[in-house]
Amino acid sequence: MYYQIFKEQKLKLNKKILSCILAACISIALPFAFTGCKNDKSVIKINEVTHSVFYAPLYLADALGYFEEEGYSIELENGGGANNTMAAVLSGAADVGFCGPEAAIYTFIGGDEDAPKVFGQMTNRDGSFLVGRTDEKDFDWHSLDGKDVLAGRPGGVPMMTFQYVMKELGVKPNYITNIDFNFMTSSFLGGTADYCTMFEPVASDYEKAGSGYVLGAVGALSGEVPYTCFMAKQSFINDHGDKVEALLRATTKATKYLYENDSLTVANKIVGYFANTSVDSVKTSIDSYKSIDAWVENMAMKESAFNRLQDIIESAGELTRRVNFDDLVITETAQKIYAEVYAK
Image (cartoon, rainbow, N blue to C red; front, side, top):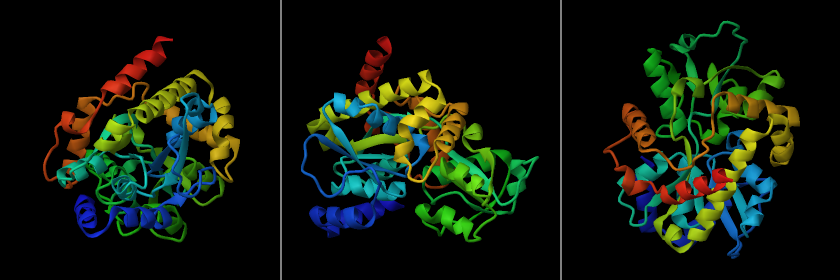
């Protein structure tokens, strides 16, 4: 498990050196992100697990000027997997990690002295879509039995949730696990596997290009899972509570805006955050995520959801021991902001 790698890295490498390595090598700068290392107290540096319309409220908050209203701007980098995102947080290369809470669980179990805490949840179910090579008009998930599937990295929420759903259905695919998260779609395009899970807008763009067919939403089967969350080291939360509040308030307001406006309006606001992607594609993606109730209005994680996630991790054989909700999750700030935003 990668929490052991983190622990070893912290013992062997100076954090300052590791920060530079991470910034240069594992983080892929987005077209709209700030570049370079800034020592700017008004910037919140966020490393996101991947770049997707699944995280529309984050980009929408930026587009609508909600961060600016709070006195901050955001710097986004794509970690390409929760392991990379957590490494960036632990090293100090990022203030906030935006990924599955399993990364925080692993790190906490690993005994990190300043283990990151989850302070806000954005999505409440799996955001990936299954893409196949042929247009299966009467697609049935049992078609995956014995087939090669690219569904994520072992120990990551996408893979574990997919495995959990397949077990519930009694389906036994052959999982291909030796391909990095960022290269799954390109590997599928190159001929690897029979099926591949993709986030939006990649899945829709892939279908429009004639490279495959979107067959089903994993989130429609998975039920509620605390899928993607904001987390930061306890020391950062203690020292920069204003940034934590700003991030939660801006994204909570953006989620409210998203649900109160039509998908085309939202798509026009955030299309600039997706290079070479059309407004229509972004709109389709938003419609898809709205249809599975992807986003939470109250970003305070529920203990029942946290326990369900640990059930999923246990089912995948990736959990050495369970973690108490109160040891890893902070809800007070998110609860306060939800009450403020929705009281208006």
